[in-house]
Length: 217
Image (cartoon, rainbow, N blue to C red; front, side, top):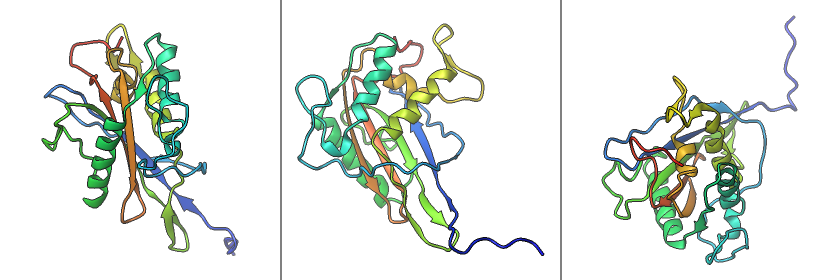
């Protein structure tokens, strides 16, 4: 007889997909293959809370529910010798509004620039995570920490070649290049749960990066 599964053990599958945009009119959204995630991280959704921490350099402070977001950005930027980003409440509100819009529209990954709705002309990185689906039919939101989206974007750095200013063949690196774009000075991010338990994370950057034909630093 084939061995049966322990009824007390539930299997789960989840995935997360990042998506970056270029500031130029010819921008395209590239989606990487789904990633199976096993780690459970601290929940940090909805960045409209008033509590702040001291994690962001400069004047404005990021909300506590976003602790780790700007720190990861700035560690990556420091590794290539570009100035740190500061937190922008204006960009955070802008990102939160778009995250809420996408969540209400089927949790689709669509950039403001592609939708013709980018009045601030900001750069943008997107990150989507599916709900965790259990073998008994239950589903629940993944517990995504604020560090996780930028860490995923930063992971693309190994697929970017500064000399040729290109991604490795078949790879995506636009999230990484926006993160380290030297002329970008501010960032603001938001997140929102979707009706199916998935979630969208949005970060906006000013000035925007990923200009065609230019190197990030």
